[in-house]
Structures are given as structure tokens and as C-alpha cells.
Length: 255
Ligand code: HPA
Image (cartoon, rainbow, N blue to C red; front, side, top):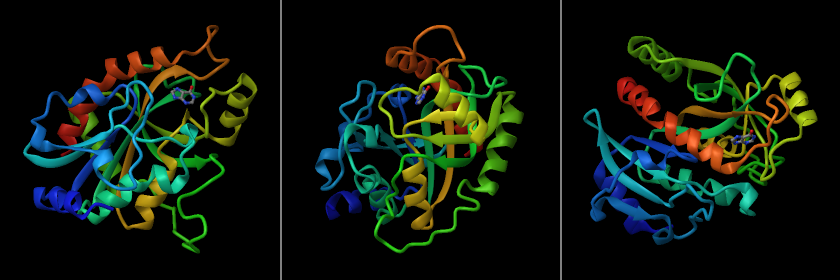
């Protein structure tokens, strides 16, 4: 991994990083070139070829706090391995990041969680069939994978700002196809509130490195079968863009 890039982030001095998922990339606008580190400049970090995902770190500030924005992520469904899709998390840990915020787009399976709203992840179901710790004998405790302390702070910030913030369980699946209605019914029975194709491997890697994690799903659609129409990636991106600003208000308030 590129030690020059690690040093650049270290010198910036941020403790918090946020991974921006589908549709949320537009929240970082036109940064100065000196604040940008493209993933391709860092050995071992795959970019994403999926529309709506940039592939770069941006060093910036929010509410007076230094933040590393990770614009875009690689996904298992693109053919990358679990160690590949978590290389960015290892990079950030080496660069001095202590707290990681993960965002994603997800389909809602909870009838009370309508598309357009946000869900703070309280726990996950890793249904990807893999883990970044494969082969490591690293028996990481995931009891409080999503920091209870930080969750409390976000819930408080949401209340103070009058923003709706659901809380629930995220089922991480492999993709890239969306689920069948039968799979959606199964996932609901298993205890899922939202379904998505990222985040779980990053959380596992972050916890293994001792980072504190908070994660949020932008509920972009009803999962398959809960709505009459078919699902489209374009719709998911558009819904992400529409709700992104609201999340940034929440994030700013929680800082
Ligand atoms: N299923 C899985 N992943 C998703 C969905 C979905 O319905 N929406 C956005 N990402």
C-alpha cells in the first residue's frame, strides 16, 4: 500500500472517515485537486466501475471537523474479493482513522420504513457468503459491531433536528441481481429491515482493526415483491441523490 498516500492522510489529521454509497457522491462538490487522492494512486485499492460511484478520497471539513470522504467503493458483485473491497478500510486505519461511517443504498423490507427515509443500522446479517477475515483465525467479537455510543449520538442529533431516522437490521447480500420476492420474504423472516450489497465486509474489517463503526442505509426502494413494479438501478441512484442532503444535515449535527 502506498506510504506517500498514507502519509498525506495522516498529515491531514482526520479521525473520522465516511464512505459514500450509491447516489451520495454528489454531496462532495468540486474539491481542490490537492484534496483529492484517487484510489488508483494507492496500491491494492480497486475502483468501482458502477455508475454513480467515483473512486477517490477527498480530504475536507464539516462543522469544523476534518473528515476523509471516500467517494465510491468496490463491490463483491463486481467480482472483487472480500479483502479487495475492504482494502480502503485497512488504508484508512493505517492513516490514523479511528471512526468510520458507512452509507449505502438499500431496499426496504419493513412496511414502516418507506423509501426516501434513512435507517441507522443496529446490526447486520452477513449473507454474502464471505468475509475479509477468511483464512486469518481472527475471532472478532461483533456483539456491538455498530457502536451503541455513536448510535445514541446520531439518534439524539436526529431528534434535535427533527429528522426521521429509523433503526434496524441490514442484510448484506452478494448481488448484483436484486432479490426475488421469495427471497425478500425469507429475509424479512430472518429479521432484516433493509437489504443491500455492501457494508457488511467493511464493518467486519473495521471492527477487526478496532475502528468504531456507524452505518446508515438510504432506503431507495421497496424490496422486490413489496411494490408492483420492477426495480431499476437508475431509480435507486435518483432516490439516493434526493435524500443525500438530509443525511449530511444529520451527520453535521452529530459531529
Ligand atoms: N436489494 C438489494 N440491494 C439494494 C436494493 C435492493 O432492493 N436497493 C438498493 N440496493
